[in-house]
Amino acid sequence: MAGVTAEPAAEEGSRNPFSSRDYRAWLTASVVTALGVGIQIVAVPLFIRDRVEPDERAAAIAGALMIQELPGVLLTVFGGVLADRMEARLILVRATAVAAVVASVYLVLAAASVTILWPVFLLSAVIGAAGAFENPARQGVLPRIVTRPQLQNAVIIGNVGFLAASDFIGPALGGLVAGFAGLTAAFSLETALLAAGALLFLLLRGYQPLAEEEHTSIGGDLAEGFRYVLRSRAILGLLLLSAMLGIFFGGPITVTMLLIVEDVLQLGDHWVGILFATFGAGMIISSGLMTLRPLPRRGLMVALSPVLAAPPLILFGLSETAWLTVVALLAIGPAAAIFMNLSLALLQENTPQPVMGRVMGIYSLMFAASMPVGIAQTGLLATLWGAQFSIVASAIAGGIVGILLLVWSPVRKLA
Image (tube, rainbow, N blue to C red; front, side, top):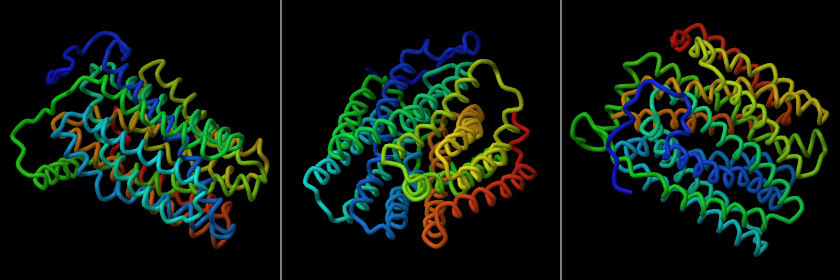
Protein backbone atom coordinates (compact mmCIF):
# COMPACT_ATOMS: atom_id res chain seq x y z
CA MET A 1 0.00 0.00 0.00
CA ALA A 2 2.90 2.33 -0.64
CA GLY A 3 2.33 5.74 -2.16
CA VAL A 4 1.87 5.84 -5.92
CA THR A 5 3.04 8.79 -7.96
CA ALA A 6 2.95 7.53 -11.53
CA GLU A 7 -0.15 7.94 -13.65
CA PRO A 8 -1.33 5.33 -16.18
CA ALA A 9 0.96 5.77 -19.16
CA ALA A 10 -0.86 4.01 -21.95
CA GLU A 11 -2.94 6.15 -24.28
CA GLU A 12 -4.16 3.35 -26.51
CA GLY A 13 -5.95 0.08 -25.98
CA SER A 14 -9.18 -0.99 -24.35
CA ARG A 15 -11.78 1.50 -23.16
CA ASN A 16 -12.63 -0.95 -20.35
CA PRO A 17 -11.69 0.64 -16.97
CA PHE A 18 -12.14 -2.64 -15.09
CA SER A 19 -8.68 -3.68 -16.22
CA SER A 20 -7.43 -1.34 -13.47
CA ARG A 21 -7.29 -2.98 -10.04
CA ASP A 22 -7.62 0.40 -8.35
CA TYR A 23 -10.68 1.28 -10.40
CA ARG A 24 -12.39 -1.86 -9.17
CA ALA A 25 -11.52 -0.95 -5.58
CA TRP A 26 -12.66 2.67 -6.06
CA LEU A 27 -15.96 1.61 -7.62
CA THR A 28 -16.77 -1.00 -4.97
CA ALA A 29 -16.16 1.44 -2.12
CA SER A 30 -18.13 4.19 -3.87
CA VAL A 31 -21.17 1.97 -4.48
CA VAL A 32 -21.32 0.64 -0.91
CA THR A 33 -21.04 4.19 0.44
CA ALA A 34 -23.73 5.38 -1.96
CA LEU A 35 -26.15 2.72 -0.72
CA GLY A 36 -25.93 4.31 2.71
CA VAL A 37 -26.43 7.75 1.20
CA GLY A 38 -29.51 6.50 -0.65
CA ILE A 39 -31.10 5.19 2.53
CA GLN A 40 -30.45 8.56 4.18
CA ILE A 41 -32.29 10.38 1.35
CA VAL A 42 -35.52 8.66 2.41
CA ALA A 43 -34.94 8.09 6.13
CA VAL A 44 -34.12 11.66 7.19
CA PRO A 45 -37.26 13.29 5.66
CA LEU A 46 -39.36 10.57 7.29
CA PHE A 47 -37.62 11.25 10.61
CA ILE A 48 -38.45 14.95 10.24
CA ARG A 49 -42.06 14.31 9.18
CA ASP A 50 -42.78 12.37 12.35
CA ARG A 51 -41.64 15.32 14.50
CA VAL A 52 -43.38 18.36 12.96
CA GLU A 53 -46.90 19.52 12.21
CA PRO A 54 -48.22 18.77 8.70
CA ASP A 55 -48.13 22.42 7.60
CA GLU A 56 -44.48 22.69 8.69
CA ARG A 57 -43.15 19.69 6.76
CA ALA A 58 -42.02 21.49 3.61
CA ALA A 59 -40.13 24.17 5.53
CA ALA A 60 -38.53 21.67 7.93
CA ILE A 61 -37.36 19.30 5.18
CA ALA A 62 -36.10 22.19 3.05
CA GLY A 63 -34.28 23.65 6.07
CA ALA A 64 -32.48 20.41 6.87
CA LEU A 65 -31.48 19.90 3.24
CA MET A 66 -30.28 23.47 2.90
CA ILE A 67 -28.16 23.23 6.04
CA GLN A 68 -26.64 20.03 4.66
CA GLU A 69 -25.63 21.85 1.50
CA LEU A 70 -24.23 25.00 3.16
CA PRO A 71 -20.98 23.42 4.45
CA GLY A 72 -20.29 22.42 0.87
CA VAL A 73 -20.51 26.06 -0.14
CA LEU A 74 -18.03 27.05 2.55
CA LEU A 75 -15.66 24.09 2.55
CA THR A 76 -15.67 22.26 -0.79
CA VAL A 77 -13.03 24.50 -2.41
CA PHE A 78 -10.79 23.83 0.58
CA GLY A 79 -11.57 20.16 0.08
CA GLY A 80 -10.25 20.57 -3.47
CA VAL A 81 -7.05 22.17 -2.19
CA LEU A 82 -6.63 19.31 0.27
CA ALA A 83 -7.17 16.77 -2.53
CA ASP A 84 -4.21 18.32 -4.39
CA ARG A 85 -2.06 18.15 -1.23
CA MET A 86 -3.00 14.85 0.46
CA GLU A 87 -3.33 11.21 -0.41
CA ALA A 88 -6.91 10.73 -1.64
CA ARG A 89 -7.38 7.43 0.18
CA LEU A 90 -6.91 9.05 3.60
CA ILE A 91 -9.51 11.74 2.85
CA LEU A 92 -12.04 9.20 1.60
CA VAL A 93 -11.68 6.87 4.58
CA ARG A 94 -12.00 9.65 7.13
CA ALA A 95 -14.93 11.44 5.47
CA THR A 96 -16.92 8.21 5.06
CA ALA A 97 -16.22 7.24 8.67
CA VAL A 98 -17.66 10.59 9.81
CA ALA A 99 -20.82 9.90 7.78
CA ALA A 100 -21.12 6.49 9.48
CA VAL A 101 -20.91 8.15 12.90
CA VAL A 102 -23.70 10.58 11.94
CA ALA A 103 -25.89 7.68 10.80
CA SER A 104 -25.29 5.95 14.15
CA VAL A 105 -26.50 9.08 15.97
CA TYR A 106 -29.72 9.02 13.92
CA LEU A 107 -30.04 5.36 14.88
CA VAL A 108 -29.87 6.22 18.58
CA LEU A 109 -32.36 9.10 18.20
CA ALA A 110 -34.84 6.91 16.34
CA ALA A 111 -34.45 3.97 18.72
CA ALA A 112 -34.99 6.26 21.73
CA SER A 113 -38.03 7.92 20.09
CA VAL A 114 -36.50 11.36 20.62
CA THR A 115 -39.01 13.99 19.50
CA ILE A 116 -36.83 17.12 19.38
CA LEU A 117 -35.85 18.29 15.91
CA TRP A 118 -32.75 20.45 16.39
CA PRO A 119 -30.23 17.53 16.23
CA VAL A 120 -31.27 16.99 12.59
CA PHE A 121 -29.89 20.38 11.58
CA LEU A 122 -26.58 19.80 13.39
CA LEU A 123 -26.20 16.35 11.85
CA SER A 124 -27.06 17.71 8.41
CA ALA A 125 -24.25 20.25 8.73
CA VAL A 126 -21.74 17.53 9.69
CA ILE A 127 -22.76 15.36 6.73
CA GLY A 128 -22.41 18.33 4.39
CA ALA A 129 -18.94 19.08 5.73
CA ALA A 130 -17.80 15.47 5.24
CA GLY A 131 -19.08 15.49 1.66
CA ALA A 132 -17.21 18.73 0.95
CA PHE A 133 -13.94 16.89 1.49
CA GLU A 134 -14.96 13.51 0.07
CA ASN A 135 -16.30 14.58 -3.33
CA PRO A 136 -13.21 16.37 -4.72
CA ALA A 137 -10.95 13.53 -3.54
CA ARG A 138 -13.18 10.79 -4.98
CA GLN A 139 -13.59 12.49 -8.34
CA GLY A 140 -10.10 13.95 -8.57
CA VAL A 141 -8.27 10.65 -8.14
CA LEU A 142 -10.12 8.92 -10.99
CA PRO A 143 -7.87 10.15 -13.85
CA ARG A 144 -4.91 8.73 -11.91
CA ILE A 145 -6.20 5.16 -11.86
CA VAL A 146 -7.31 4.70 -15.48
CA THR A 147 -5.85 5.57 -18.88
CA ARG A 148 -7.25 8.46 -20.91
CA PRO A 149 -9.16 6.17 -23.36
CA GLN A 150 -10.79 4.53 -20.34
CA LEU A 151 -11.71 7.77 -18.59
CA GLN A 152 -15.12 8.50 -20.12
CA ASN A 153 -16.39 4.98 -19.47
CA ALA A 154 -14.81 5.07 -16.00
CA VAL A 155 -16.78 8.24 -15.25
CA ILE A 156 -20.01 6.86 -16.68
CA ILE A 157 -19.75 3.47 -14.95
CA GLY A 158 -18.76 5.20 -11.72
CA ASN A 159 -21.76 7.51 -11.95
CA VAL A 160 -24.04 4.61 -12.89
CA GLY A 161 -22.85 2.63 -9.89
CA PHE A 162 -23.13 5.59 -7.54
CA LEU A 163 -26.53 6.67 -8.88
CA ALA A 164 -27.86 3.10 -8.92
CA ALA A 165 -27.00 2.86 -5.25
CA SER A 166 -27.82 6.40 -4.11
CA ASP A 167 -30.91 7.12 -6.27
CA PHE A 168 -32.29 3.66 -7.05
CA ILE A 169 -31.39 0.75 -4.78
CA GLY A 170 -30.62 2.81 -1.66
CA PRO A 171 -33.83 4.89 -1.61
CA ALA A 172 -35.96 1.88 -2.56
CA LEU A 173 -34.32 -0.16 0.18
CA GLY A 174 -34.62 2.70 2.66
CA GLY A 175 -38.31 3.21 1.88
CA LEU A 176 -39.09 -0.50 2.16
CA VAL A 177 -37.13 -1.00 5.39
CA ALA A 178 -38.57 2.17 6.96
CA GLY A 179 -42.10 1.31 5.83
CA PHE A 180 -42.09 -2.29 7.03
CA ALA A 181 -39.47 -2.44 9.81
CA GLY A 182 -39.29 1.17 11.01
CA LEU A 183 -36.76 3.99 10.99
CA THR A 184 -34.49 2.34 13.54
CA ALA A 185 -33.89 -0.55 11.14
CA ALA A 186 -33.30 1.85 8.24
CA PHE A 187 -30.69 3.86 10.15
CA SER A 188 -29.04 0.62 11.35
CA LEU A 189 -28.58 -0.51 7.77
CA GLU A 190 -27.30 2.93 6.73
CA THR A 191 -24.71 2.91 9.52
CA ALA A 192 -23.44 -0.55 8.56
CA LEU A 193 -23.09 0.37 4.88
CA LEU A 194 -21.21 3.61 5.52
CA ALA A 195 -18.84 1.88 7.94
CA ALA A 196 -18.20 -0.81 5.33
CA GLY A 197 -17.56 1.88 2.71
CA ALA A 198 -14.91 3.50 4.89
CA LEU A 199 -13.13 0.16 5.27
CA LEU A 200 -13.36 -0.60 1.54
CA PHE A 201 -11.70 2.70 0.60
CA LEU A 202 -8.60 1.35 2.38
CA LEU A 203 -8.19 -1.06 -0.56
CA LEU A 204 -7.39 1.89 -2.84
CA ARG A 205 -3.66 2.43 -3.22
CA GLY A 206 -2.19 5.65 -1.93
CA TYR A 207 -1.82 8.08 -4.84
CA GLN A 208 0.49 10.87 -3.80
CA PRO A 209 -0.37 14.39 -5.03
CA LEU A 210 1.21 15.69 -8.21
CA ALA A 211 2.43 19.28 -8.37
CA GLU A 212 4.17 21.35 -11.01
CA GLU A 213 5.76 23.46 -8.28
CA GLU A 214 5.94 23.64 -4.50
CA HIS A 215 2.73 24.52 -2.72
CA THR A 216 2.79 27.95 -1.12
CA SER A 217 -0.21 28.56 1.11
CA ILE A 218 -3.74 27.21 1.10
CA GLY A 219 -4.98 30.65 0.03
CA GLY A 220 -2.42 30.79 -2.78
CA ASP A 221 -3.37 27.32 -4.03
CA LEU A 222 -7.03 28.23 -3.88
CA ALA A 223 -6.49 31.45 -5.81
CA GLU A 224 -4.56 29.58 -8.49
CA GLY A 225 -7.45 27.15 -8.89
CA PHE A 226 -9.93 29.98 -9.41
CA ARG A 227 -7.57 31.72 -11.85
CA TYR A 228 -7.32 28.55 -13.91
CA VAL A 229 -11.12 28.25 -14.09
CA LEU A 230 -11.60 31.90 -15.07
CA ARG A 231 -9.01 31.59 -17.84
CA SER A 232 -10.95 28.74 -19.47
CA ARG A 233 -14.38 29.78 -20.77
CA ALA A 234 -15.31 26.17 -21.52
CA ILE A 235 -14.53 25.03 -17.98
CA LEU A 236 -16.39 28.05 -16.63
CA GLY A 237 -19.39 27.22 -18.81
CA LEU A 238 -19.53 23.66 -17.45
CA LEU A 239 -19.44 25.01 -13.92
CA LEU A 240 -22.25 27.50 -14.58
CA LEU A 241 -24.39 24.73 -16.02
CA SER A 242 -23.87 22.65 -12.89
CA ALA A 243 -25.01 25.57 -10.74
CA MET A 244 -28.16 26.04 -12.80
CA LEU A 245 -28.97 22.33 -12.50
CA GLY A 246 -29.09 22.50 -8.70
CA ILE A 247 -31.30 25.59 -8.61
CA PHE A 248 -33.98 24.50 -11.05
CA PHE A 249 -33.92 20.69 -11.01
CA GLY A 250 -32.06 19.05 -8.12
CA GLY A 251 -33.56 21.19 -5.37
CA PRO A 252 -37.20 20.94 -6.52
CA ILE A 253 -37.13 17.15 -6.90
CA THR A 254 -35.42 16.56 -3.55
CA VAL A 255 -37.75 18.81 -1.54
CA THR A 256 -41.07 17.85 -3.11
CA MET A 257 -40.87 14.07 -3.54
CA LEU A 258 -42.35 13.26 -0.12
CA LEU A 259 -44.96 16.03 -0.50
CA ILE A 260 -46.06 14.76 -3.92
CA VAL A 261 -46.42 11.20 -2.61
CA GLU A 262 -48.50 12.17 0.43
CA ASP A 263 -50.49 15.22 -0.69
CA VAL A 264 -50.99 14.70 -4.44
CA LEU A 265 -50.75 10.96 -5.10
CA GLN A 266 -51.93 10.01 -1.57
CA LEU A 267 -49.74 6.92 -1.43
CA GLY A 268 -47.80 5.17 1.35
CA ASP A 269 -44.28 5.91 2.57
CA HIS A 270 -42.70 3.19 0.46
CA TRP A 271 -43.68 5.16 -2.67
CA VAL A 272 -41.13 7.82 -1.73
CA GLY A 273 -38.42 5.23 -2.24
CA ILE A 274 -40.07 3.85 -5.37
CA LEU A 275 -40.23 7.26 -7.06
CA PHE A 276 -36.66 8.15 -6.14
CA ALA A 277 -35.72 4.75 -7.52
CA THR A 278 -37.64 5.45 -10.73
CA PHE A 279 -35.76 8.70 -11.21
CA GLY A 280 -32.50 6.85 -10.63
CA ALA A 281 -33.50 4.08 -13.03
CA GLY A 282 -33.95 6.57 -15.88
CA MET A 283 -30.43 7.88 -15.31
CA ILE A 284 -28.94 4.41 -14.95
CA ILE A 285 -30.43 3.00 -18.13
CA SER A 286 -29.41 6.07 -20.13
CA SER A 287 -25.90 6.02 -18.66
CA GLY A 288 -25.46 2.35 -19.55
CA LEU A 289 -26.36 3.05 -23.17
CA MET A 290 -23.77 5.84 -23.26
CA THR A 291 -20.91 3.38 -22.61
CA LEU A 292 -21.55 1.36 -25.77
CA ARG A 293 -19.70 3.64 -28.18
CA PRO A 294 -17.80 6.95 -28.28
CA LEU A 295 -20.21 9.89 -28.33
CA PRO A 296 -19.92 12.80 -30.81
CA ARG A 297 -20.40 16.48 -29.93
CA ARG A 298 -20.45 15.82 -26.20
CA GLY A 299 -20.28 19.53 -25.38
CA LEU A 300 -23.47 20.24 -27.33
CA MET A 301 -25.23 17.37 -25.59
CA VAL A 302 -24.26 18.75 -22.18
CA ALA A 303 -25.39 22.27 -23.10
CA LEU A 304 -28.77 20.93 -24.28
CA SER A 305 -29.43 18.78 -21.21
CA PRO A 306 -31.22 21.43 -19.06
CA VAL A 307 -33.52 22.30 -21.96
CA LEU A 308 -34.34 18.61 -22.46
CA ALA A 309 -35.04 18.08 -18.75
CA ALA A 310 -37.63 20.87 -18.44
CA PRO A 311 -40.67 19.27 -20.20
CA PRO A 312 -40.67 15.99 -18.24
CA LEU A 313 -40.15 17.91 -14.98
CA ILE A 314 -43.25 19.98 -15.83
CA LEU A 315 -45.12 16.72 -16.43
CA PHE A 316 -43.95 15.46 -13.02
CA GLY A 317 -45.33 18.60 -11.41
CA LEU A 318 -48.69 18.38 -13.18
CA SER A 319 -49.24 14.63 -12.76
CA GLU A 320 -51.81 13.42 -10.24
CA THR A 321 -51.56 9.71 -10.99
CA ALA A 322 -48.82 7.28 -10.02
CA TRP A 323 -48.23 5.86 -13.49
CA LEU A 324 -47.81 9.28 -15.12
CA THR A 325 -45.46 10.39 -12.34
CA VAL A 326 -43.34 7.29 -12.98
CA VAL A 327 -43.22 8.07 -16.72
CA ALA A 328 -42.20 11.67 -16.05
CA LEU A 329 -39.38 10.69 -13.69
CA LEU A 330 -38.09 8.10 -16.14
CA ALA A 331 -38.12 10.72 -18.91
CA ILE A 332 -35.96 13.12 -16.88
CA GLY A 333 -33.29 10.42 -16.66
CA PRO A 334 -31.63 10.78 -20.09
CA ALA A 335 -31.01 14.52 -19.72
CA ALA A 336 -29.71 14.03 -16.18
CA ALA A 337 -27.42 11.21 -17.33
CA ILE A 338 -26.00 13.30 -20.16
CA PHE A 339 -25.13 16.13 -17.84
CA MET A 340 -23.82 14.12 -14.89
CA ASN A 341 -21.61 11.87 -17.01
CA LEU A 342 -20.36 14.00 -19.86
CA SER A 343 -19.79 17.22 -17.92
CA LEU A 344 -17.53 15.42 -15.46
CA ALA A 345 -15.68 13.55 -18.22
CA LEU A 346 -15.10 16.77 -20.16
CA LEU A 347 -13.85 18.53 -17.02
CA GLN A 348 -11.41 15.75 -16.20
CA GLU A 349 -10.16 15.40 -19.76
CA ASN A 350 -9.47 19.13 -20.07
CA THR A 351 -7.95 19.82 -16.64
CA PRO A 352 -4.25 19.30 -15.76
CA GLN A 353 -3.76 16.81 -12.92
CA PRO A 354 -1.88 19.22 -10.59
CA VAL A 355 -5.01 21.40 -10.30
CA MET A 356 -7.55 18.56 -10.67
CA GLY A 357 -8.57 18.54 -7.01
CA ARG A 358 -9.20 22.27 -6.99
CA VAL A 359 -11.25 22.18 -10.18
CA MET A 360 -13.26 19.25 -8.78
CA GLY A 361 -13.70 21.28 -5.60
CA ILE A 362 -15.01 24.29 -7.54
CA TYR A 363 -17.25 21.96 -9.55
CA SER A 364 -18.68 20.61 -6.29
CA LEU A 365 -18.93 24.16 -4.96
CA MET A 366 -21.05 25.33 -7.87
CA PHE A 367 -23.51 22.50 -7.38
CA ALA A 368 -23.41 22.80 -3.58
CA ALA A 369 -23.95 26.56 -3.72
CA SER A 370 -26.87 26.15 -6.08
CA MET A 371 -28.66 23.46 -4.08
CA PRO A 372 -29.50 25.70 -1.08
CA VAL A 373 -30.94 28.23 -3.51
CA GLY A 374 -33.00 25.56 -5.25
CA ILE A 375 -34.10 24.05 -1.94
CA ALA A 376 -35.00 27.43 -0.44
CA GLN A 377 -37.01 28.65 -3.41
CA THR A 378 -38.80 25.32 -3.68
CA GLY A 379 -39.60 25.22 0.03
CA LEU A 380 -40.97 28.77 -0.12
CA LEU A 381 -43.08 28.21 -3.24
CA ALA A 382 -44.33 24.84 -1.96
CA THR A 383 -45.35 26.39 1.37
CA LEU A 384 -47.17 29.30 -0.30
CA TRP A 385 -48.73 27.64 -3.36
CA GLY A 386 -48.10 23.91 -3.11
CA ALA A 387 -45.55 21.39 -4.32
CA GLN A 388 -46.96 21.10 -7.83
CA PHE A 389 -46.74 24.84 -8.49
CA SER A 390 -43.16 24.97 -7.22
CA ILE A 391 -42.05 22.16 -9.55
CA VAL A 392 -43.69 23.58 -12.65
CA ALA A 393 -42.36 27.10 -12.00
CA SER A 394 -38.82 25.79 -11.45
CA ALA A 395 -38.94 23.69 -14.61
CA ILE A 396 -40.11 26.60 -16.79
CA ALA A 397 -37.45 28.92 -15.36
CA GLY A 398 -34.78 26.24 -15.80
CA GLY A 399 -35.72 25.68 -19.43
CA ILE A 400 -35.52 29.41 -20.21
CA VAL A 401 -32.13 29.81 -18.51
CA GLY A 402 -30.93 26.65 -20.25
CA ILE A 403 -31.73 28.14 -23.67
CA LEU A 404 -29.81 31.30 -22.78
CA LEU A 405 -26.78 29.28 -21.64
CA LEU A 406 -26.95 27.15 -24.78
CA VAL A 407 -26.60 30.27 -26.91
CA TRP A 408 -23.85 31.85 -24.78
CA SER A 409 -21.79 28.95 -23.50
CA PRO A 410 -18.68 27.67 -25.38
CA VAL A 411 -19.38 24.26 -23.84
CA ARG A 412 -21.32 23.33 -26.96
CA LYS A 413 -18.08 23.44 -28.98
CA LEU A 414 -16.28 20.77 -26.94
CA ALA A 415 -15.75 17.46 -28.73
